[in-house]
Image 1: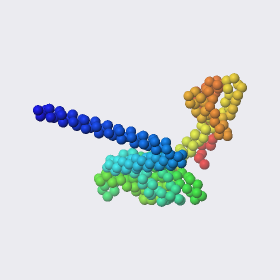
Image 2: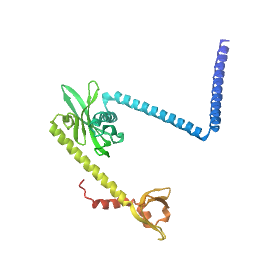
Image 3: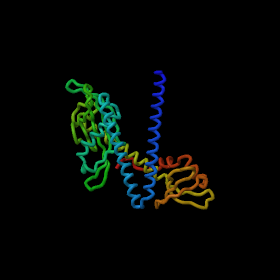
Image 4: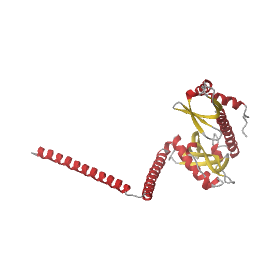
Length: 299
């Protein structure tokens, strides 16, 4: 008999849960129909206002998700502080730059610090007052207005120190476009404990090397863009046009003219020379020839 009561009890629970599920479905269906009928009865102006409200709610939900994601990142960075890794160092350096480097900008309120430009590199450890510290060199870029109101990009550098005993992480030096703007420059050197003059010299050498690398990359991209311009000819030689190659999608070649207009041409319609140029990525070969004519010295 107790076993039968137990079985009946289980069946009763299942029945109650099924009834609750059915009622929830009925409520949801009713709400959907009511919403549909309400939309159908709206004027175009009311419908536009309704859609705007829904879009605002959607954006607010997205903002809340983004805030929650950032909060998780901050918690993760704090959790990893004792064993600071590259991602945590990048995050901490980026946040420090937003606070410290911003004050050194001509127009601080216009400063934007893109996270995709941030990178971190572990430096040699240092020791002060009998305590050992890990060091991280974090670099990135900032876009801000100059004295004439034009947006320009500058490079920043933040040196972080990680206390190996308590796990604290804090900045000790910051530079903007190779100029020390905060802290002590001695922490930016390879050894970490030389003079400020030697520190600035080392920072200047690194900044100059980075400037040369950026200029070389700019020239390479410029050469590729120039190399993509050519005169395109059809296989029957009845039509030709000067345009820039903008890619191939589903067998169609996308071409951009000088006036900015674009057109799509079937790959099979082009002459053999043009098709082979695309197949062999001829713009890369032509770009190398163009680069040979460019003065390699950055201006």
